[in-house]
Length: 267
Image 1 (cartoon, rainbow, N blue to C red):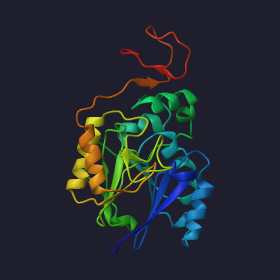
Image 2: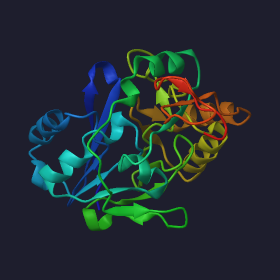
Image 3: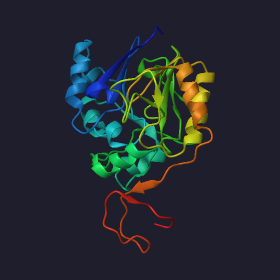
Image 4: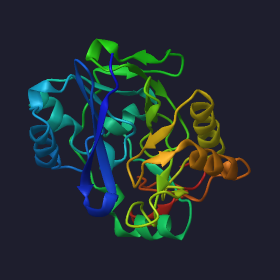
């Protein structure tokens, strides 16, 4: 297969939130679906490149945060394409469980208080569900030369796409720019506002660089070159997870009102 064309679709201005189209030689794969209500922006990007919803062969959701999975159910309805994701985030896709968030700094704490990351979206069950033991999934049946594989660390069920062209689409394993990502300094790697396990992220990013990935496309900012991703990954190796926040049902050890609260052991 020839080299794919990767199209960044801005869901919010300045690269703050992105999803991506991969136009392969014979197929089209959508990576992430943006916030709820993003389908019109995705349709415009498809039309700009001579495609329609019905040309989408596969939807890959990299993880269960609302800015990546928010329009997945609607886009599956519009495209008829199956959704690929990982079982580690299944309870969140199905909206059976509230997510928790490990902040990476002051902006994560601020962002948590806005409540934006907590907004619900239409629940769905992925059609193709990777698990921890699964081998990378070949994407050539969907017209794209590459694989989708489990790359935990940002969330337990995070997934990345690695193409034979040397392009990796990694969701939120890394961001670039400032604050949420984007705006300025988009060539400079940063941690996203939330990250479950920085040391696992480091292992996954270094593994992709060592496997020959040259360009990293992400949900916030980007793209980044391999050398910058390596620098960032090395800086994560000694870090521990940040404070965990989430929305919890009342329990014996947490009598606070629901909201941006700390999740305590045992809850």
